[in-house]
Amino acid sequence: MGDLLGVAVLGAGHMGADHIRRLQHVVSGARVAAVADPDAARAEEEAAGLDGASVHTDAVAALDAPGVQAVLIASPGPAHEEALLAAFARGLPVLCEKPMAPDSTGALRVMEAEARLGRRLAQIGFMRRYDSEYRRLKALLDGGTLGRPLMLHCTHRNVSSPPDFTSAMLVNSSVSHEIDAARWLLGQELTAVTVLRPASSPSAPKGLVDPQFVLFETEQGALVDVEVFVNCGFGYQVRCEAVCEAGSARIGDEHTMVVTAHGSAREEVAQDYLVRFADAYDREVQAWVDATRRGTVTGPGVWDGYAASVIAEAGVRALESGRRAVVELAPRPDLYA
Image (cartoon, rainbow, N blue to C red; front, side):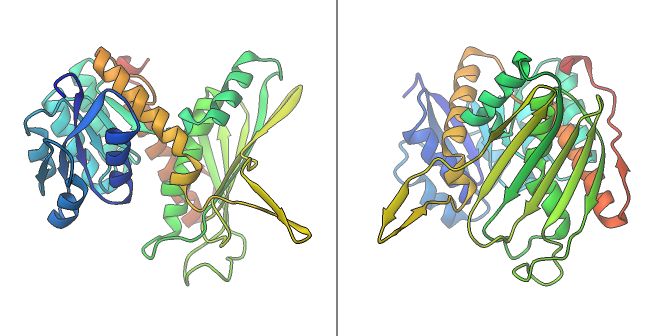
């Protein structure tokens, strides 16, 4: 057990519980050394059966627990900044679920704090970069055989939204994944955003603007559109099509089991992100564990978390104003050049 990377998992809810399972039973080279959650009973439940794992209601206290060498933050967004800054102060490597911070001001503080250290400590949980289909699309675009990318057409659908989901969260929570994926796939920053509001679906809770059509502009003249529909009712669907000068490529078409019987065929549709992106989460956490044990940091970093936050805020301004909003990023520190 001493050779395994000891990880403190902050947050024992839906996402945190899945990461605890992953660290203990799926990835190699790591173990859960501490579990923290304000709900003591939930933390105890998730830590049950984990040899040597301590339980905490205070996230920062968990960082000082015996055997903790790294941190996985899966708590709600408002708790991320404090946890990240505490990990930085202790020199602990971090994998932080998105959003890195709930607003761009907090994200900037996190970025400045890491930049002052002069070395990267944090990887941000944009797991689509580890999905096999997204990686194939990235390799194809980087290879240049289809020419310059002109447009990305994206779809992001959920079965239903949580009770506290707001119209702004369609952009700053759901579409934040497309924001990072577009920046990564194209190798470009997003410079402006417009949000169109079609008539809301009858299945959307009262007052929720759902679906939305989000249009991003990039620094090299490409366009990225996202249909986001978080109460579609039938399944979880994520698709992306790149339209380039000499061809196009599409990912996200379901390749699941098809059952044919009684004169008809039925295809399974994933019901949530933990099913659709299970392999991506596994690869993401394994890559983080491997890099941490080598003393390095790879994958999307604090600059990516900051940029996503600023772009999402521009998207919310566009939603609320009905006008195109310009994205204004702070100068990129040398650490992220």
